Amino acid sequence: MVPRGAVTARGSTAPLRAAPRLLPSSELCPLSPALGGVNERTFVAIKPDGVQRRLVGEIIRRFERKGLQLVGMKLLQASEELLKEHYISLQDRPFYSRLVKYMSSGPIVAMVWQGLDVVKTVRTMIGETNPAESRPGTIRGDFCVEVGKNVIHGSDSVESAQQEISLWFRPEELPCWEDTAARWIYE
Ligand code: DAT
Ligand code: MG
Image (tube, rainbow, N blue to C red):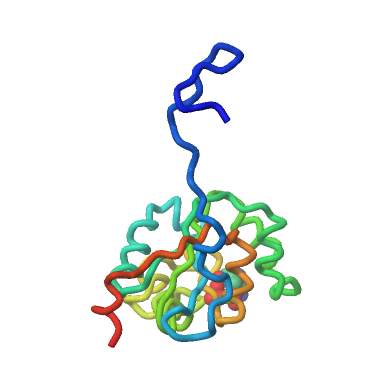
């Protein structure tokens, strides 16, 4: 390894930036924590329309203010292959290929949120699949009008959340951090 700032054999100066430090696996949270309780996790993705329409900050703000804990987040343009796998249960539906194309058409923000009953809580905050049936105050109720551009994804069960988290994230992308606000959020 070249020391910081040292001149390499080819005469260039090695970058002064330190490489990102990855946590040793012993410090990572388990990908599949005990079901339920305050350690429940869910997978959320702000879809390409949500990113383009500058809704990322608004959506994160809602989950943060609720008291949920952000344990993973990245901006990425997902491959059709990944999205086909993510939506595999819908493969026989007529809108499947359009859905995969739309979801791969631009960057999305993939996240993992943690908290008590987080799967159900996030689904409630998102609203119904069809924005027209979503109440005002929900994300889909407030920010979109059509089912094919409904801004956000959230896992629909604890089991699918676990599958989706392991499909989208590597363990080292989910740092385990102590939620010091937890005693003001939970009894
Ligand atoms: P949700 O995203 O609320 O979990 P879902 O899992 O049933 O809904 O479907 C996944 C996505 O597929 C949904 O967010 C938008 C799209 N979709 C569902 N039903 C559709 C329909 N009838 N026409 C077009 N797109 C649809
Ligand atoms: Mg779904």
